[in-house]
Structures are given as C-alpha cells and as structure tokens.
Amino acid sequence: MLRLLESLKGTRGRNIIFLRSPRFHPFDRFKDFGDVRRLAGAPSAASGRRLAAALAAFRPDVLVTEFFPFGRRECAPELGPALDAAAMSGARLVSSLPMPYFTAPEKDLPRLAEECRRYDRILVHSPAGADLPYMAKAVRLERRVGERAFSAFFDGLSDRAVFTGYLLPRKMPRPSRGGYILASRGGGSTSGELIEAAIAAAAELRLPLVAVAGPASTPAELRRFKALASSLGGGAEVLREAPDMISLIAGAEACVSTAGGSVYEMLALRKRMVLAPYCGTRGREHSDQLARAWLMRDAAGAGLLLPGGVTPSGVASALRRALARKPSRSPRVKPSWFAGAARSAEEICRL
Image 1: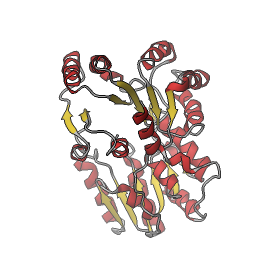
Image 2: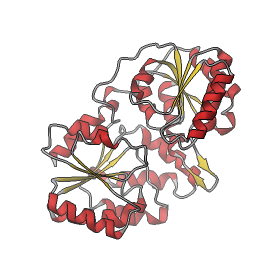
Image 3: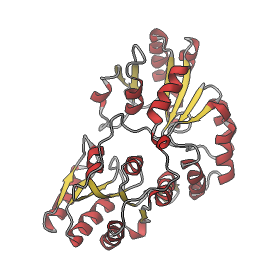
C-alpha cells in the first residue's frame, strides 16, 4: 500500500488512510501521504459505522481497500458500511490485491463474485499470465477450490480486473555484489528454522551472512539467533528488521528466503535465490508462497527447499548450487512486469 500511495503522490489533493495492522507496521511512514487513522480493536459493526461516518464527511473520489474482498474476510462487518458510505458519496471503489489469490472456498464463489461487482476496478499487482497459473496449480494444496474454478473466477472478472505488474519502489537501487548472503523470513511470524539453518550453512561455507529475522520476531528468538551466530564464529549479522531492505537485496550475492513479496524485488534485481516457501500447517495450508517459489524457479532458476530440506546441510547445498551459476532471468520476464506502480496510478486516476 505504501508503494501504491507513493505512485499516487502529487496526483490527488488529499488522502485519508485507515490502518489496522500488527504492532510492527510502519505507521509513521504513512503520514507522508495523508491523514492516518488507526482502527482500534477487532473489526465490528460499530467500527463500520464510525468508518462510514468518517468517509461520508471526507467524501473521497476513490476508496481503495487492500486484500478485501478476496481476503481479510474478518473485516467485512466494518468494510461493508464503509463501502456503502463511499459509494453514496459518489466515490469509485477499487480493490488492491498483491497477488491473484482469494481465500473463499468454491461454494462461496457466487458471493465473492457479487461483492466484486461492487467495485469499479480490481487491481491485481502481478503481470498478466505470470502468477495466476502458478497460484491456480498450487491452491490444490488447500483442498478448498479446484484449479479450473480458481482460474475461471479471475477470467470471469473480465474488464473489471487489471493485472498491473508488480509494485516496486519508484527508485530501485542498482544491483551490486556486496559479498554476503542475505537470509530473510518476511514479517518474522513463521519459518524461524530457516534463519537458524541459514546461519549454520553460512558458517559451514565460510560466507558472511546478513540475517533479517523480521519485525514480528520475539526477543527470545532474536537472542537464540544471535547466540547461534556467535557460537559458530560470529560471521553472521542478525537484524530484527531492515528499514532499507531492498538495498540489502541489491547488494547480496544470493538470497535465502521464504517466498513472500520480496521475491519480486529479487527477480527485478536479477538475484540468485534459494527459497523455502512457508506452506502453513496441517489443516491450515497456504499455497501462495509455493506458487511464487515455482514461478521464481522457472523465471530465475531459484532453488527450492520444501520443509524437510530446511536444514543447515540442505541450505548449504542449495547455496553451493546457486553460487556456482551466473544470475539469470528468463526472456519471458519483460520490463512491464515491474511497472505496476505507474499502471495502478494510471488506472485509479482514470476513474
């Protein structure tokens, strides 16, 4: 959302931004783009009434929701009234999706389609023909919707859906060779074993490592990661978070990571990747990271580690293979894949 706001800066006179996010969300960074209001407590009908009143007074030209209605279903009680109030004020409605993915089971697709018809645009921040086939194939892991029904749903959105390309920062750093391995696990709520395995693997290979544990890491986890790095010779620097993560990516010899949204930056910067997608737990499987890992395997030669392979020896072997080859990128990856910020701003301003 920050990148979408950045792309719109200077095109709109004023913004009001409502945020409900974990404690580590960079609220202060949003203040550069408008009036930021934090939503307290859990989503509720009462919160929805307050949102509706605020939007009726603000009278926006466009209301953008992030993830909803494809995800964040718990926010429906408050977003329903907010959408109604914005529409009654004459606002156009836009859904911003970081990927072509939804959480609804197949039996609920008619309801989801009805909700989508409320929106004027559904901006899917990936290239047409890139992520969607991989998401459709991987979603079978979750056993809630078939591959064909998943793909057909996006096809059925017709002109309402726009595949924009990936949202990258307006100013990308130049790729360089900083001589270190970068290990990261996104926000830091999962995949602690990947950070531990990367620290041990880098020590085995005698390579410097920068490990970003993620802003959701607990103090106990950070102590454990730092103690492991120290016990293995101290060749790894362990950070809780990195304000300029993309510059760390730009300077890395190779990136060991879960397969979250940062893989698109790694792809843009032509980085070698070793990816260990988080697939959820039994009964609560997640397929989006697996889909991205498959895409990066085919688009950039990324090495894949499934959960059983996330060990020091498994990561070390994958890194050896990655470092033995030159960085590469498939000819199918075009510059338009990375133009999502400008395309999204164009679509919103056209409404």
